[in-house]
Image (cartoon, rainbow, N blue to C red; front, top):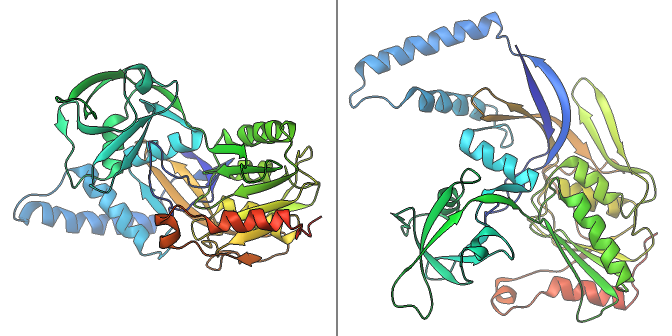
Length: 399
């Protein structure tokens, strides 16, 4: 038997803050491997069953279902590798991961947030199913299909209740400001395309185009291409590229997006055990090859984000402002397994164009600028302010 494998650069540093979580980092490239176990593995499994059969016979209180036992055994075995990125995902989180990277999923089209009181607040996406069904901004979710939203539920728990197969209905009970009684809504789940990027001209200086990228998905390259088309047409002369909190994404998207800023050269180098170095080169046709660029980074900038930031820093094409990045520079393969679960296996390390390792180290910004809890509480963004000041004072020294 053979199993299709996909190469990944993955990290789990970003929290789920709305109907999709921050991404992992995947490079879609085919690879084949033999699934037949070696003789020693068969002996080890025989010992496993010898132990488990005794437990099944004697354990007081009964044992969990076979699937749970199998998943637990797999996770326990992987834990002995002491590698946080070699992981096993059960079918449900595996499906969520796939949907996040595709940039679309079956849902209602609403952002899910938790307020200071611990309540789950919904805000509909413009033009999506939730808005069309009458969901209003600020509605507080009380129940999904009659099941109460409990205080101990996480945002991810709530998202899992709301998501489902496209075309199926989900009933929401919400509390709405100005209404005495709860409001009942029935929303038919649809394919929800989740944008990974936002862009605009800055009010402080309309010659600066601001682009925020939340994840590197299958849609990101087209979105960034559209961003440059619009911003340049509107008069942008320089750019701030915000990768703060971006936990990674598709490697192909990272190479494509880095190539928007670079004429030629290397984006990233990969060193795989037994295979030597592989180089990912710049693609031609970038739309921001000469304009001054600042990249905003912080401790949540990881994986594919570090590929882009590292390439622009090494080539002198952009100035990094903010805080040291996460430091995730290993490469994983993803096995698509028979029950729709997934296995991530670390197989290589990646390096910036100048050969600098990122894994466990991170990127140091060219200009350090901290973002404190006091800044957050008072609505300040000193890192963005520093980037604007940098561009306005023409401190840029890139190529």
